[in-house]
Structures are given as C-alpha cells and as structure tokens.
Image (cartoon, rainbow, N blue to C red; front, side, top):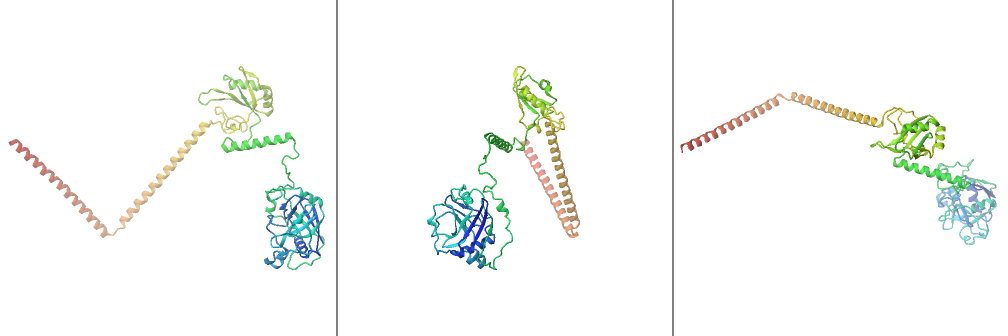
Length: 440
C-alpha cells in the first residue's frame, strides 16, 4: 500500500498505515488515483519543520476529501483518527492537516526535522512514512522561502501521482481519469515564482567582466527609454549610424571644405558639415563627417584623433546622434536614403513647414467657403418656403391683410399732415411776435 509522488525536485515513495489509519489511507489513495494532487504546489516550507501541499488553489485554504465527492458538500471534511496514537518523532512522516475542529481534508505535510516535532501529535494525523526519496526531502528542506508566509520562491509542484497498490475497492460515484490532466494557463503563467530552469541569482556563473557589460547595457537601455519619454528620441531602440564621425574642438575659421579635403584621404565622404549658429552663422566648433563605408570611418577615427588643424588639437569620436535622420540638412541638397545629413527630397525644412502652413490655410479657406455655401443654400430654401406659404393663404386672409396695410398707410398720412400744420402755426406765431416788436 504505497504511492509514488513525482515532484519538481525528485520522486518520493510513501508507504501508508492502512491498518492504523484506514480512513486517511482511503482518502489519500483515492485522491491520488483521481489525479487530484497533480500540479499542486508546495505552498508552505519551513526549514527543519514541515513541507505542506495538497491544496489545488495553492493558498493553504482550499481542498476537500474524497468523501465530499462521494456524498456531497456535508462530507467535504472527515473526522481525524486518534487511535492508535502515532507521534511525529522522525523525519519523513506524512500527516493530514487539521483544518479546524478535528476535521481533515486533502492537505498534508511531510516532516523535515530529524529530532521530531512532538507538539504536533495531538493536532494532526499521521497516516504514512516516506521510504524512498531522502534526496528530495533534503532539497525541499534547503529551499529559500519568504520569511512572512514561508512560501518558497521556486515553483515546486507535484507533477504526477502513481498508486503502486490499492487495497480498497473503487467507489462507483468516483471517476478516475485515464491520463494526467494538462496544466491550465494560470498554472503555466505563474509570475510570482521562480521557474525550475531559472537561476535564483541573476549573475550566477558569470564573470565580473560579463556582469559589468550587462550593467552597462541595462543602463544604456534605461537612458534611451528616458530620452524617448522626454521626446529627445523617437524610439528607444534607435541607434546611430556606424559611418559617421563626430569632430570637436575645431577652430572657428575651419570650414566644411577644409575638413572634407583633410578627411577625404581615408575614403569617399558623403557629407561634411560644420555646425553653425542659426542667427550669427558662426561656427560652433564641432562637425559631423559621414563616410561612404564603415572601414573608412574607422581608419579616420584611429588616425585623426588629437591631430593639429588650424592651430587646434581636434578630438574625433563616433557619432552618437540620431537627429540627422529627421532634421539635419545642408542647403537643401539631395541626400541618399541611408546617408548624409539632409533630406532625400532636397527641400529645406523651413520650406516644407511653409508649405504645410499654406496647405493648412487653404484647407481652412475651403472649409469656410463650404460653410458659406451651406448657409446660403439654407437661406434660399427658407425664402422659397416663405413664398409658398404666402401663395397658400386663403383669399379672405389676404383681403384682411390688405385692409390692415391700407389702414396703416392712412394713419401714416394723417400723422404727416398734422406735423405740417403744427409747423405752420408755429411759423405764424413767430411772425406776429416779430411784428409787435417792430411796432414798439
């Protein structure tokens, strides 16, 4: 009466105490036969204490006995067996975990202490002993775990269970699968555990030079991501061209033609440009030189560093700038797709911006004209409808409206005549007053 547990760290063979613990042995054997323990995690491991598993949820709060599958929810847990008394006095003992009130389910643990753990005797129920797999127990005992909940950092599971001998009859209410169940996506995509094929230490097996090189690469990637966030780079994985040299510490009098003549002995130069101030057009004392081949660029780098040009010791390095891919140009000259600091259509950027603004103005004007046409069309439609309503009025209504208009005209004429008469009477009064004054 034994069971083989194939775990992530090795195999374990457990012999069951079927005479002393018949119910516990029946529960364990049938659960193993139903592949209930397959892919269960060892969710609790404490050094020189116990290694606990048997919970499909991996939380330590789940699981049920085989009797719950046979008789329903009321039999999810079963009472522990206390007679005869068995003690936790050695390593490799297998016990069911007391879930509370002396009830047992599917969770069990394996003791890892050599000296024995006597204070567990009255609480949990022993039902078996590990007979093979001491190396696996030692591997479980040496796992690094969280100090708070003693959860191992590695993803340790029971991969498969095999019942070597089962003395109990199979119940008809239970179904036994023909093959082991496949893992679910949640079990495959565990992100809070270290996989078995991963190293616990990131730098394990690496030399100091390799570690330093990795640190530099990570730092460069982090800086590129920061530059992308602030807008200095369009893409974090963007790299400068290998055939462009950066030349600094130049004299102000050094021109593009001078540098092109000096550096052309190493190979054909696609573009040579001394960067100047936008307003004053004075040299900023650094330049970019693009060669046709990478070999010519490397030769110039090794030969021209610290060379005296126009009474100045120049410094030469490979260019780390990627801005030339988007806005660098020289007089709007045509450049190739993968070379030079200009645009491949030969147009200056200012000219392109002006064209964009003109096109935007034209689009706004067209939109305004469309709005005017729409409004004019609506006004014409309203006028046509108004005329149609006028035609559709009844003759009586038109007669009444005509009378009203004629009455308004008569009233207006009367007001005008009254105002004229009033003006004449005033004039007479003024004349009479003037006559009286003359007589006096």
